[in-house]
Image (tube, rainbow, N blue to C red; front, side):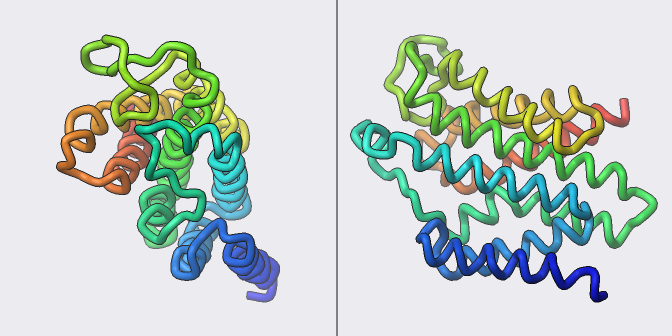
Length: 229
């Protein structure tokens, strides 16, 4: 039990820092700490590294050229301080796979791969969305492939998609196992996110948090299925 104390201290420090620097609301930071512990419990230090890198790169991408992104009409609701719903949407599936890895140790490797797949999808979505708005040149509706307004739900750019793939590759490198499975799973999740955004979120039928949760769930399931077949 004593060996787990450094992780607990690390997570508590992260909770406090997230609140102090206003990256997360108080409840979101506490929720993030609990989810982080579940990810560590099922994924060990590698799993913890995945969520830490996602949080750092995701936060950096969100903050990058924030004023420029706030000026985009379709992105007027952009928030730099994450809420509890956003934390669960991005890390909830990873935490669930961590819990399942603890409950069913004989399936631990598969659940850890699904954990990486979910965070690969979350990373791809976050980086492609946040940085795609900045570096994308041409923006298209993912269903019609007609030019559309950047920042709108279901709108993608080639640059954003490529940045998302790079984000998935970062997660895959840290996972250090099934590299292409994790990259492909993250990309599938990212594309599913855009499709859901175009079909449902843009019409106000589901929220962005729901879309992100389904994105990570798709990434986890894709990784599991690709590993099995």
